[in-house]
Length: 284
Image (cartoon, rainbow, N blue to C red; front, side, top):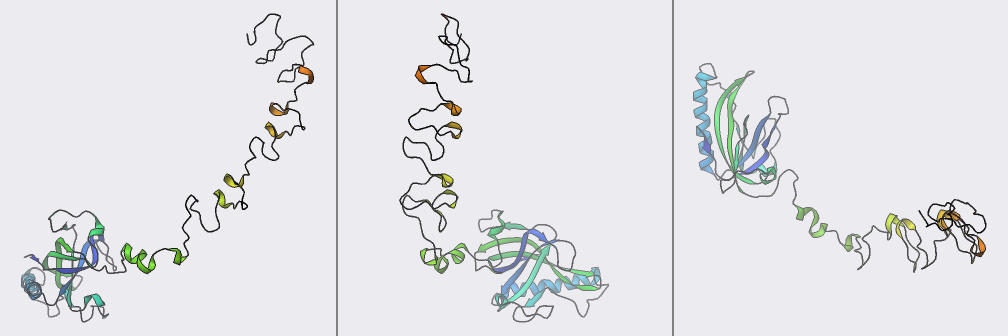
């Protein structure tokens, strides 16, 4: 027969994804319940169900009699684990029992709605659990197991197993402030790392204007230093410069862009670069 516990604390929560035991075996969903010793109603119900499972198992699992060393799933949190290791501090004042199942348990909140986010039910929160007890006889091991049917979250608690909240991790004394070496940018200034003010980490000279990637912008109306004309050609002082380093003829003489020099008196179409017939229209 299944029973529902009172308010207990959850530990080693694996109820959304099954976990493979350390010694091997079939993956199972499981949770360890820390039951306050003051909750005598839940504890007495568990012991009663364990005895019932022993009697039922005498014929079904134990070959006619209850074994003298019949293992049970409940332990005193002020004592020791089956391995001989002491229980953790969180188990003090509690009875400890682990419930498991091959099938995923039902998981709901106080509103009876399904909980789908695994982060909502964690080690340290408070739950109620619906559990059942059964006899087993496997590889010479005889005892009573605890099955997990359903879980209801009833409250939050201090996380166990090193889990911390965002406030604990980054708030209070752990806040990232100027005191911790952070210098917030001044108004209108790029938010760069220390020693970086321009893109690519370039630091412009004081009082100068600096462009992207360390490029020095030209003075208004003047080409950049070393780049006077297209293609890098530097025209002589006072002489205009054309595309690709082309030098226009003096005295208004026409010349096409491909370097063609027309005969004297002949007109060249500046679009096609070809001589124009007398009376022709440019580009036609």
